[in-house]
Image 1 (tube, rainbow, N blue to C red):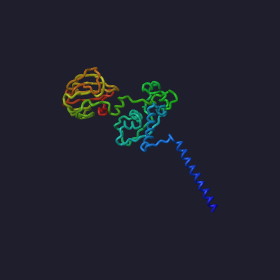
Image 2: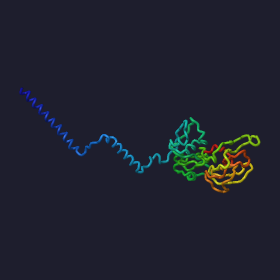
Image 3: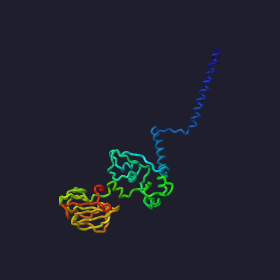
Length: 315
């Protein structure tokens, strides 16, 4: 009995010591944590931390951080491939790759963006720029200056180890763009319609309404009521105004990039020779003068003095 009592006494004492130690440890933790442990409302526990992180990111974005080095340093020219899908517009494809339309037109030698076919594969470069065919007498500095490019970027992109370039060779010019007129022509968006009306005769061969013989019609005939205002299809200078037995009262405008336009059969002329006109400026009025079967506008587009189909360059 005495032995059992002694064992019980020892066990009870041990429990008291253990309990005391646990309570002491808990008290120490509470004291150490006072002023440091803060209750967080449930709705702040996650949202608050996210807001703090978002705030830090926002502050970083507004501190003028530079672009990653790989996008600011000259890069060697590389290509990937893309297959044209139904509904694709070249401008949107270019935008999705972070490029200009001018770049995709140049690197793929596209002559008419409206003629792209579903399933057609095009090349997509890793940077903006255009190809340039070196001409006799060209220098690297001259080419760079003319196209607002950097010589060292041209060297890196084309892996040139000297400034010597050969005529008829092709160079990629990082950052350069096509002339506005050339890009608009390829997109078919170069000229405004001078009037709105019904197309009564198209560009190309037709049977003459006067002789019945097969003849070439070098423009579009657009039927409209007499007196309808005729607008300049593109900014340019008035080269000539006057009367012609075929075109009646007419106006000829010259434009940039070798283009000129003819407007015929006017009832009256609304401009003068030598005047500069903007796209959309009224230059005359629809009539039935000259060799005509009714009130309409005869509209011809010339490229380097040769007529082209106006439909290919009208918006």
